[in-house]
Image 1 (tube, rainbow, N blue to C red):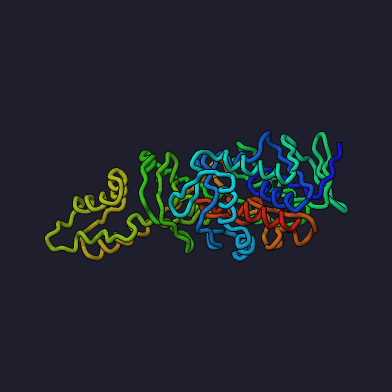
Image 2: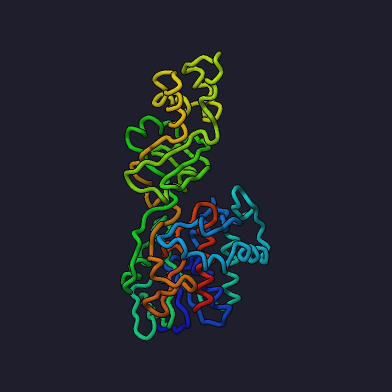
Amino acid sequence: MIHSFDVLILGGGAAGLMCAIEAGKRGRRVAVIEHAARLGKKILISGGGRCNFTNIHCQPEHFLSSNAHFAKSALARYTPSDFIALVEKHHIPYHEKTLGQLFCDRSATGILSMLEAECRDAGVNIFLSTTVKEIRHTTGFVARSAKAEFHAPVLVVATGGLSIPKIGATSFGYDLARQFGLAIREPRPGLVPLVLTAEDRSHYCDLAGVSAGVVASFDGQHFREKMLITHRGLSGPAILQISSYWKQSLPILIDLAPGRDVAAAFHHPKTPRNIGTLRAEMRTFLPQRFADRWLDRHAPVSWTNTTLADFERRVHAWPITPAGTEGYEKAEVTAGGVDTNELSAKAMESLKVRGLFFIGEVADVTGHLGGFNFQWAWASGAAAGRAV
């Protein structure tokens, strides 16, 4: 069977659905082709099932890309306020958590149902359980599945990255970009827990579940949030954030006492300079078990002003070199992707192949934790949908 449309969108996730809505509202005949049996699987599992759908503090500096300026245009033309207006139009109750993160009060299904309703209103055609086997391009694009051919002058690739393969993530979007001669920035897991070396695991990982407020730093980036010890390494928001920037075999720095002068306890001449005093001080800002365990390895060898100053520096810049990450299975996003130098910042269209667009996670734009990646999906989808 042959189907003809104005726009083919590969992928029924956040970016693909937003693109479909915007294109459909402009009178385009749109088809969304999704290989899974339902739309928006990543939307449904995000935010613990409540979908952290945007962040009110969204700015370009919250995004990582080989081209730091690329995301600015799309983000400026579709803002968190625009998506919030859509949420409120559909009477979906929501709330702000920490640091500007907006979540549904009830369930992520509210966001997906909203997008599905907007697609219906815009006359979008949805094809589920349809796996595209081949893309051909002559004067237009032809997408072939086992049972049908889809023809259109415009093809939008919204197939996502490699993260969370259990819900169907594949390399299809990258493979397609290579087919058309576009460069790829090497994909890697982003917003992902870090795995410690065997030695560090043996010392800390029996404390799994213990967390502390820290600042995690790498290569000029730093994030002040919670760190969580896991059975294999480190996680929590601070670690997930820095993981997107971390490079293999290099140490990250962890400030265990942000804004505190740990050695101040010893400034008074009558304060005993011993491990008991230091242990009591460390327990005021770290969980007791972690404070004690950390001191087992890093307590001063003597109690001079010099050694205390060295200890103070280490508390605020504890270097730890991960062995690796938990990989795409635990990564919230994929960093890297289609090189943004290959795309129009205004439209998301390939600069080499007219009518070919790449949006959302498949492009080399990765947001920080906290709703920024959804906002990129909405913004890049809207940009393409308005351009097709």
